[in-house]
Length: 194
Image 1 (cartoon, rainbow, N blue to C red):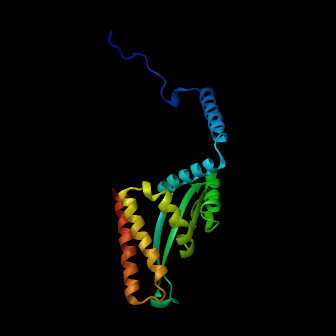
Image 2 (cartoon, helix red, strand yellow):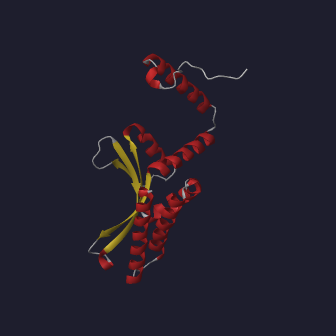
Image 3 (cartoon, rainbow, N blue to C red):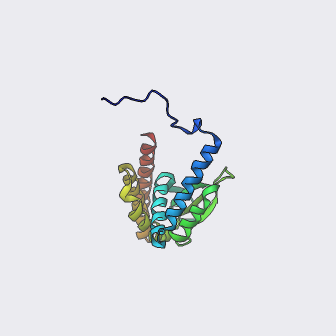
C-alpha cells in the first residue's frame, strides 16, 4: 500500500494556537533549557557563551575605521579603529558579560544614539584592540566568517597594525592609511549591496 498525504491540515504555526497553548510550550521549552544548562560545567557554560557571543558579533557587530579631522595632530587627521556591537535593553546582560569576561572590562556600554531602548558596547584604543579583541576575534569569529567578512577583517587589521607599528607618521604613512580606510569602506559597501 502506498502511503498517502494526509488531507487534514495540521497546526504548524503559532497563529493557530491559543495563548494558553503557546504559554505551555514556552514553559516546557524554558524548563528543558534550564535543566540542560544546569548539567554543564562552568567551563562548558563559558565556552557556550563565548561561542554564542561570537555568532552574535558576526551578525550584529561592526569593525570600522573613521578619519577624523583633528587640527592639533600632525597632518591634521586621525585614524580611529573601533569595534562595536548593539543590543536591545532586554539583552544588555550579554554586553556586560562580554565586556567583563571576554574583553577585560575595556570599552563603554552606552545608549545607541537616537534610541532609549538600545545599547552599544564599543572600544577603540589600539592597545585594547591588539591585546583583547583581535585574539578573541581570530579564535572565535574569523574561522566561521564569510569571504567578504574575512576580507573586511584583513583590511581592518592592516590599519590597526600600521597605526601600532608607525611611531612617527610621515605623509607616506598617512596616504597608506587613508588608502586602507578607503578600501575598508569599499569592502563594506560591497558587503551591504550583495
